[in-house]
Image (cartoon, rainbow, N blue to C red; front, side, top):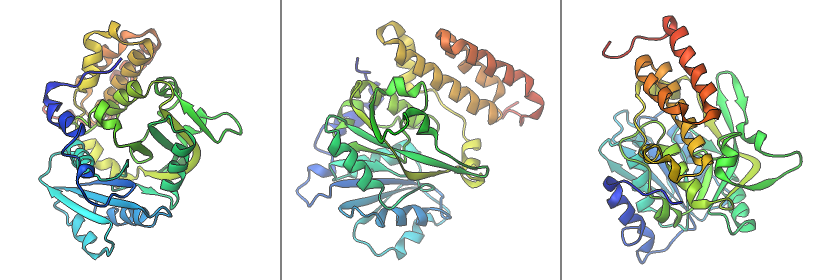
Length: 331
């Protein structure tokens, strides 16, 4: 069942259906459009940009959307001499609006995202284009990724693959019960997918990608997402990158609210994924110091039997760890 978009997304939905797409304009089109949302990542944006422009697959355009950076981040890009790079500047409106702006500027048949503090291996695009070529029914391809933090590396998607499997076609919600199958810096999507799913929810700083994946999962059904075991990107979670996450309070997620408003309209797997999203947001609130506000998210996540135990555990953490948590803002 398709998830209806909210009225304040009508402009984005209309744009995703036709004329405003840059790809509909009579100009030369690259096969792939890469979108990098940029806000105050001076220390890492050069690394991200070079990992795109150094791809073995060269038929691409790189759209960096500078979302009102005030640390000189985009100044670094002035020294990049490559006609495939285009910098679009806008007032600060958040990562969702920046990614949406990039999608509407895109000319390629395929769209990929890369956060300004992450990076790709040089064959990232070649690997995912090959996956989509071998699975033409798929609308999204995802690569395994390395999580690089202060404690070393992990590869979260390994649990989805049986021994010897190189790539698989998955049902998003079934895969999500084991490990999150999509990461914003490690996917390649057919651009027309956004005409049926809509774009990222504006004004949301945490969980905005999960809100979109919920709609992507329903739009793709059980054969629309292909994953490769090949690890081709790095998600950096060092202290600098986590600092911004701690300062921002998670928001309500519109697609989650839509499911919870009438849960019987949606399959059990969708309801379980929604509860997982709620617990993720509760955890972010708790670790950011918004302990009391996390309780409402935990209460909403109790709706499926599978997540009631997890909700109780999160509730206990909220109360038992209170001495080690920062003070709530406004307390």
